[in-house]
Structures are given as C-alpha cells and as structure tokens.
Picture (spheres, rainbow, N blue to C red):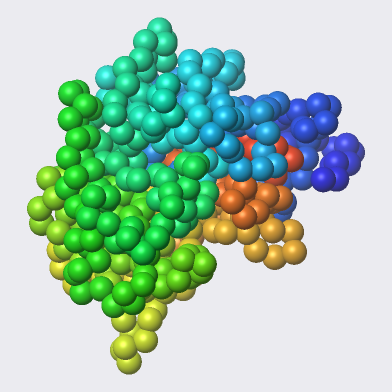
Length: 421
C-alpha cells in the first residue's frame, strides 16, 4: 500500500502512531477516509499479525488494564493442524504483549474462542496430545492450566458452564469457522442424532448433549431429504437463562455456501426450544437483555415479502421492531453497549477501496455516527472483519483490522460519542 506523504502530521495520525509493516520498516499507512469527526484510534499491537477474533466477547480484563490478543506468524493462508497460535495479553500501560499459552485449534474469523472468565482466568480451545479437540482454562499470570474434554463455543456469564459445537463438522460445511481436519459428511451423517449442542460443566468436565441436529431438523424444517445440517453461532443471553443458535442447512454438499438459516432459542438444559425466526436468513445477532435480541435477518413485509434489516425480536414471541430502518442498511457485527443504550456495528467492505466503516447507532434518536473507515486488503476465509467489541464501561471499542498491511488490534475512544444522549 502507498505511504502517506509526510508534509504534515495531523493529530489523527499522531493518535494512530507508527507501527511496523510486513517489510519491517516504520511506516504510517493509509486508513481510508479520515476527518476530525472520527474517533481517536490507536494500534495496541505491531509487528507479526495479531488479532482477537469474534465480536461477541470482551477482550478487556476486569480492571481494564489488559486486552487479550493472539499472535500468528503468517496471514496468507488458512491454518493447518500443525500451526501454533500464540495467546497473550497486551498491557495498555506500555503495549507490551505478554504470551501465556499456545494453541493449534484456531481459525482467522473467531480465533480460538479466547475469553476471560469471571475469576480472572481465561478459557480457549486446543488439542490434547492425541489431537482431540479440548478446551483449556488457564491462569495468564502463572500459566497454570486445566484441560476439559470438549472445545467450547460460548461461555455462560457466570463462568460455570459452556455450550459446545462440532468444530470438525463446522469446518466441512462452513470453512473458516471450524477446525481442521474437516468432518466427512455423507448420507449417514447429514442430520446426525449424536451431534449438536453440548453443555459442558467447566468445574467438573461433565458434558451432556442437550439438542441434536436431528431433533432440530425435524421441527417445521422445509429442507430436502438430502440436505446437510449444522449448528453455528451459539450465544447465551445477558443473564445466562437462555441461549440462541443458528440451525443451517444446504440441499447440496457441493453448494454448502448456499445455505438457509433458522434462529432458535432454548434453555441451557435443552428445554424450552423456540423457533424465533424460520424465514431462511439470519446472519449476525446480539442479545440486548435477557428477553430481546437484535439480528440482521428477514421478517415478513405487508405482502409477505422478505425485509432484510436489523430486527429487535422478543424471545418466545412474534414481536419484532425494525431498528435503524433507513440508516443501518447492510449486515454487520453488532453488540449493545454494557448499559444497553448504544449499538456498535460495522459493515463488510464496499467500494473500489474496499473500506469497512465502524459505526455507532443511537436507538433512541435514530442517529448513526461513523467512527472511522478502514481498508480491507484480505478477503475470503483469510479476511479481517472489524468485529468491534466494547470495553467494560462502554467508553472504548476494540477491533481487528489489516489496513496497515498486517492484521493488528486497535482501540477507538468513543467516550465523547456516548457522553450525551
């Protein structure tokens, strides 16, 4: 990418700072469209590629002084079972990356599901000595670790249990979101009764299959008999009383990208299963509170047509409200601020420059603020979505971006945006 001319160092570039690019020279690279109304942004990692992963987890420690991050040694291909990812914390006082573990169970979109637990430990996915997928609870200060028998997807807010999926099946049917090797999907395993959602007790390691793929496929599902089914994107609500997940299916294995999606909710013991949206398309979503979640999805229009947008739905009911109808017009990775007053999101790259906007939306006024724009040089399974995430007091957001030439982690100060109404 071209260097910026060094005629004048504007305040925004001073805030972003200087980092090292792929060639190892100190450079400041183009970030896309910039103006004084954007949020102040700074890189907190540099050098080798760094990232955090998905948008539905908070990387900040409880005291706000450390941010979880992961370091790779390449970014031009998908990881194999032999590629190790370094896990660490970035101390915000001096931006020092402090490694505490490695893993070989990871992907570019969601990393290794690295996240904090309430007691200050962290959990992530790995492989045991025999190559079986597991999860690990680790103390990042001492390195002390404890292994659990299944890789996790989402952790209960209380930290005592997690929901697990089949990552090998996911890699076969949704490459880039699972872990290699991909599962062999055949006529006997297109809707299995021994694969689905597992609940894992993080204290004892006990596991229980709470819902099979076969059970979900039998509930008002219009899929063809030869369709292959899978679960993805499971997330607890804000108090852990219920969770949601996507049931996806594709009528032809060779065209797994042409899937249909249904959104379900249920309790973590498997009871109370509810089909919240069965119209065929749901993408990203986030819980606002225990009873409401927002999603980029289809809802029925006045003539029965599909209307795509940000829909705020009430769990276990047909109630839904179109949010940001005229200003949130493209799919993004959305989360509510800790106080529920603001919606943070992004969009996929667009235009000749392939820029991704970072957005803040006020549901009370309907106003949308653009916090910045960032070029997206990577694409496909290797892409680097912004995946923005709030800090714990709602004054800053963390995101991944490869606009500098390497995938790095950034923090944007949004305190002045959220200070008013």
